[in-house]
Length: 363
Image (cartoon, rainbow, N blue to C red; front, side, top):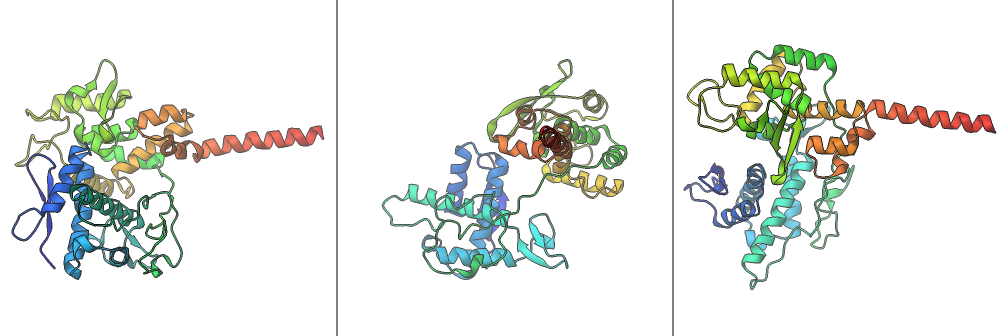
């Protein structure tokens, strides 16, 4: 198998799939540049670059021609992804059975791989309109809301595949927040103003981890008790902030933040990178340390955001207001917090039972 790897590059798109000689793979470089030109976020570009890296390694390892890939080949790729372990046999994108056996990449991850591959072949077709080339991924295959199958998905190896047979059904999991005592233990364990400010922005502001990292010093309006947040897809929203959050941010900015020309609010505090913007890997390391120290293994950054959404829904916040607060592009992403919160279910149940009783009484 060729020594393909993911490498950072200067400027746009920021990532490249390179061979053993360090030279970017030309078709993939063109595809990633196209994604960046379409204003895809750097996180999305990196994710697609990783997906194409996995696909390219598989093509190289099986001796397949990238321009002659068929649906049957993709079915083999899916099987390979389902059976291979993740990095170090760890991570949320690796599915395990109850006995601990690794069953490969999750359906959600594989479906994203298919979306990236579909976009890649569409890009090739646009670049080479005169060359006969079929997109091996049927249009409209990827739908993340399908549920997980129990049998027979990959038993079909025929060339002609109807809509949905390449698509892996994914389980619809409910967002789970932290319990009040878990939140207390986590917040109490935070020793620096920086780490506390980041955690509270997610817990009480509903920010995504990437939004915390891109938050600039000038984006926080202390007087207005709000922050201007750069969300997904180039969108912006203004998030009101709790006094505890503002206090933690203010103390960090005054007492701990290193002198730096970087506009980002949260910077590396120690070591050779002191004063540089905190990276996503650095943020994960910080929370991995704190959740171990606090004895709250579920306290990852996204779980803190889920805690915010669940708490707001239980407090009776309107779904459309919550959608704006959390920066969701579709109300469907927000409704799950409202419709499935215990308080909302109890209220709806009690109201329905009261109507039933009133109807029985009139009868």
